[in-house]
Length: 321
Image (cartoon, rainbow, N blue to C red; front, side, top):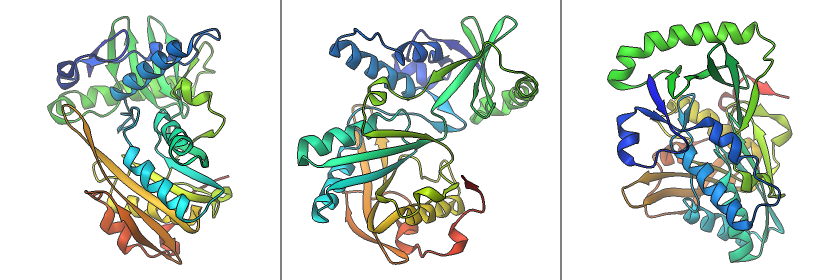
């Protein structure tokens, strides 16, 4: 629950393992607003640091871990699909895209490898958070006024549920503080609160990426039948969601795709020196998905996608306008 606030990201693996440190949220704010006269090298450096901070950040139970070129094999499968179908422009919905840097990778991969046009709509549940002075502390919270962290100088108090022995010891205290903070946010006009963008500054400068904030389990009626591909990388897995919830997301992906569109699912295994992608690509065929290509390893939910059959039961009742 108690964290030492760092100046930026956590530079050492032991700092991550001990769960005693927290990356700087204010540094994210600085990096998200780079100087207009900064050099390309400065922009690249800011972008890397921004993503490094995300690697240490967990919001509402979801790790924001991201980084350059970690979905290169999935980009290859997607480009092969777009080329085989002769698409003049590939419209992609990227679910749970974190800071968007892998969406930018996709745009650049298409340009460099295939010379094809691509446009990405990235969706994430949190594309910004807020910080607000509260007496001698700063309270950080989401756009829906969900408390995340209370910072007192160099000390941070996590207000979200924790795992393991830390959760057993501190979750009751964290829950109590979170309730107090939530009541404060509900009764406040949020005067003095400042927004902190969670979108990589390199992504905000890319005209081929549209940023959307929201729940991937809520139907967007304007998206039905609009996309050539839907990608869900490092987000639809059993450590985050139940099987029923994942089926809901698969059902929505099916609705968002054009007939013959591609559904890509992957998960990266993080090792000491590198990452390994497990992934596959399915094509929408009628009310089902048909697996068309895969990597050496397939994602853990591959069987759910293989067995999927579209029905009204696959669509959640809630909908966003």
